[in-house]
Amino acid sequence: MNHSPRIRTVLGCTVLVAALGASATACGSSGHPLSAKPYDAASQISFNGPKGSTKADPDTPLEITTKGDEARITDVTATDAIGRYVAGELSADGRRWHSTVPLAAQTHYTVRVSTEDEDGAPGRKTLDFDTGKAGKEKLLKVTFGPKHGTYGVGEPITAKLNKPIKDKKQRAVVERALKVRSQPAADGGSWYWVDSKTLHYRPKEYWPAHATITVHSNLEGIKVGDRLWGAAAKPLTISTGDRIVAVTDAGAHQMTVYRNGKEINEIPVTTGKPGYETRNGIKVILGKQYYVRMKSSSIGIAAGSSDSYDLPVYYAARVTWSGEYVHAAPWSTGEQGYANVSHGCVGMSTDNASWFFDTVREGDIVKVVNSNGEEMDPFGNGFGDWNLGWKKWSAGSALADAKTPDPALRARLAPEV
Image 1 (cartoon, rainbow, N blue to C red):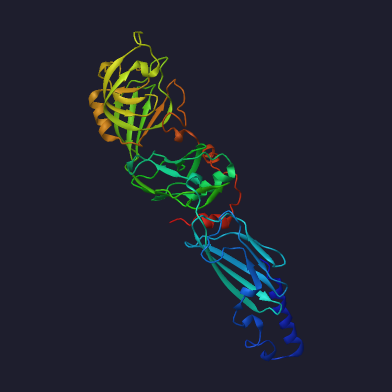
Image 2 (image 1 turned 60 degrees about the vertical axis):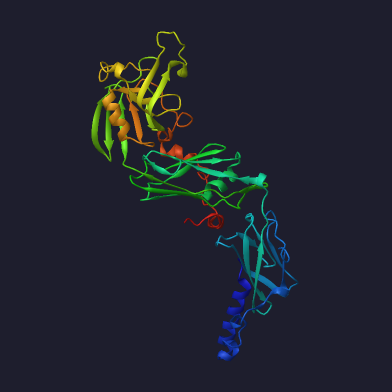
């Protein structure tokens, strides 16, 4: 904002005092226009806001202009009911101010205008108005996941949108409004756009053990795109348990289980045989089932072939949607610890599977190394999010290229709570 006329008035007064040797009577506190009580500037400004009980169209930018040449605008501050600022721009001559970011729908705004007249005397005017609402068909809704509960340290936060967002600027508006906080604090954290309707959030490393993670949206009432506005979203709170990481070495046919960095068990296992090798990489337990009927047809093996099967399986912890589990395999106890004979699952004895089933929870980590199988997909077959390095993960954010995010817009979409 340009305050140069006011500054010139002060400097001019100082020079006058020095030149004339005058006392405070020339520029004293009782006579200087800058020390006067601000006058009502209503007669000097025009405002394009609504009249009376009418509500403003949130699509229309705010605009404040001066009437005639008797005054100029020196400052405009516009905030909503919860203190979010509206960014704006004041012309160099002080004759016009206009907002540069969208207004929120169904929101009360207070606009404080400061002016000065041709003698430098200050004027003030406060304006209040409400914005109208957006139609239901124009609302962008967000649903957070997983459900409330306690999870392992590998569980990502998900955000599902009801409408696709493809424009990067619109994605940035959405992403800035989705807030995640961990207590104790996690090491960094970023959203990743899996597709136009799905975002995942994870820290640089796993979540801290025994953390409380809160997720909320500040998107309500915010304009995302042409006739598209953010809707209210239900916040989410989850917690993490111990840090459980199970490392399966397919070459050594052993699984080593760690709790909070300390080894607590080593289990002989069998993994995928040639042609059905277990996927390498980091996987997240998706759920547990005491009993699952496993049929070879579910993974594309025709009934009647030498590789077909139809088996009752117990103590099954799922790690991919395509059918990879850690489970009891009593039919292969002779090979466990010595050979890989499964169709891709990690098999172990019934006693060991029962222990594993009771030890782990959804969100715990199962990492497979030294397999000849493919790498775990980051998305689409479970939660393979941790297989992306932090640099690649961060690049999946719509804010990745933002050098200096607009502080006014950031303040408007937040502060965090």
